Picture 1 (cartoon, rainbow, N blue to C red):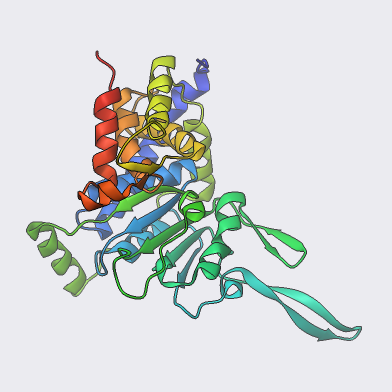
Picture 2 (picture 1 turned 30 degrees about the vertical axis):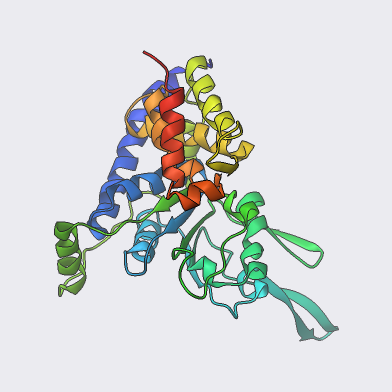
Length: 324
């Protein structure tokens, strides 16, 4: 277990307060969805991409745009449609005429921003969906023989409607694995719905103010990456991932090694937001659902019996939870 230096013992309290201010500011523009906001914050603090799934009209787009304002990030929204081409996302080389003749010049696409909202990503064809793969994993874009580095911090927050809807293309497993979290945006309660109507239909919209910039976000990420994890907690975390690969009638394919990496980062960030410099078993369990639900492929038996990915994860956590 790594040792904490004095600077880290003094810095987290200040940084945690700044992050709490950011979360509070986001809640000014979003009614309810507290768990969704917290999980998106965890992803931002660890450099992860997020897939938000929910029916239309639940405020997914509003949440992403609010985050962009609070963190003062350059923001681009890409509306994914069946006729969207990969070059519409990444950019393309164009011919430019000058005194020396003609030459190619790279015209940047909307992917060149800190925060990308890939709206209704599952309405685009798989070819266009795959245009995000390199950017999400490597933070670069390659067009022709030339690679272009994206500005840090860089995040993709994609929204999708449930795949049962008409006119959608389910995301392939390779791309799903690039998302750190899959977050389910659920329908609000009656009281939350009342607050949403009052907020959106009122004559004066809430003023969302900047609380932090990209450099501050990168500093917080570096700080969180140094939070230690006890051996017992690490073993529990790894056992959860490995359990998705044992014989289970409800699992067709288990989680990838990226799941373990994402669990570690998310658990550290969860501990940090709770004001602790140590990761608990509960931090791991809270992170397990958004980290694993899109990385587990349920079997035909699970689908036919109505067993969801969350049900499978709950069973694994119950079986592997340490006896304390």
